[in-house]
Each structure stands twice: as C-alpha cells, then as structure tokens.
Length: 143
Image 1 (cartoon, rainbow, N blue to C red):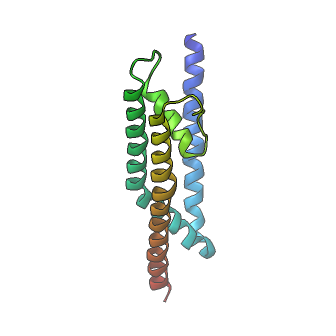
Image 2 (image 1 turned 90 degrees about the vertical axis):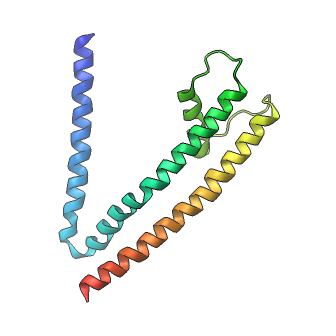
Image 3 (image 1 turned 180 degrees about the vertical axis):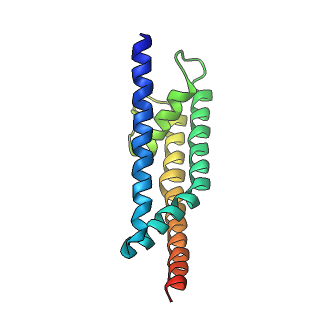
C-alpha cells in the first residue's frame, strides 16, 4: 500500500515535470520572430484571465451552495460533488431535471445564462482587449 502511494507520488512529480518542461519549451519559441507575438499574447492572456477565472469559480461554488441548501434533507450531499456537477453544467453536461423541483430549473437557467452567456462574452472581451494591447506593444517594439 505504501509502495503504491510512493509510485503515485513519483508519477505526480513526473507529470508536473513534463508540464513544466513543456511550458518552458513553449516560452523558448519566442526566439523565432513569427512566434514572438503569439507567445506574448498567450502569456498576457493567461495573466489577464486570473481574475476572470476566480469570479467564474466563485459563481460555480455559489450555485452549488444554493443547490446544497435546497436539497438539505438528502443524504450523501457534499459541496465538492455539487460544485463538480455545476462545473460540468458549465461545459454542457445537462442534468436530468425531469423529476426535479422548479427551483432546480431556476438554478439551471440562471447558471447557464450567467456562465455560458454573460461570463463567456466577458472572457471574449478580455481576450480581445489583451490582443489589442499586445499587438500595440509588439508593433511599438518592432518599429
């Protein structure tokens, strides 16, 4: 049993190392001029999305908490599983709402409207602004 845990720990470190080396290799592509703007755009987009992702995960947690309060009398009710189900709804996994109370329908509709419509439009505008800023910055360096 302890050997299995050590083997899993080694695999986790190996995966982390591969991901780190992959990102490091990607950043080295900036020496090629045609990749320079794309690498800078990717880096700046990741930095600009941190606050957006925090708000998005907060919305997932709040809707999971509302669902948990609604189903308070049920057994095997965990906030982590409800958060995971709301996260799956965010990516298009539709729950079975046929026998659900109306409040579940209300939560589902509000969540899909807020996350899939409003939040994704916000993400598109953030990335668009980042693209404009990076393009202006790179054009300023190359002139």
